[in-house]
Image: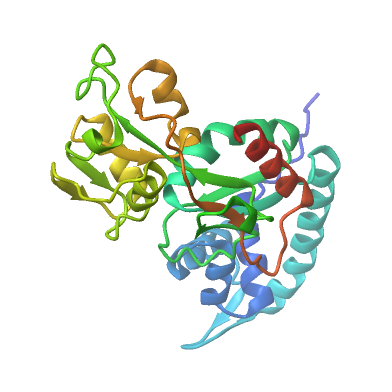
Length: 295
């Protein structure tokens, strides 16, 4: 007996359906491309692939616009229904994710935030984090802006999560611990590494030590404290650093503290003005807890 078998219907490429839906909704390849983070050419190619698979045109194309054909309008109803069903199913089985964008000075981001942020992620596994440490014009509005403010009195920073207290440090290749402890005047006879052009940290350090800032061993100035710390690790001279930023280097002996009794307050890190979407209170609490632990 001859068996009959229904011909299996071949579906079009499902991956191009979102591009078709976006183009139909916006009436523009350019707007659809912006929405999908693609180029207009990529969206156009996806729609052409779909039309070739269906064997019919879905859009009327003019120089400046696209409009649906009768077949396109009919197909769009089914596509939107299918995409809505898929979105509902995805939300049902996947945890709802949120996005937290954090802006922070580069040294704060690299040396304090990144080594600690793993604990926040463990507590909030459904949050995607974006950490911006350079002002490169990403266009993404920050939920949290960590800012730095200078100052010499910790009482002036009631809202700060981390007070910036500084130590003089150097590489053991530059000054061995086996040598006697230096006094403040002797430190200034060595090459000094500045993390700002006006030597703010060093001037506060000298004030606390009861001496004038007169670097007799010369100096090298950098535009970030991150660069000054790197230069210090390389053995180029004596730098100023917050112990919380060089915790690993101090513990391993990669850096050593000089005149450790001199540790002035030079500023503080605060949560600055927030964007339209505020950070969750949990992140502010997390920052404060870590700041208190480091204090």
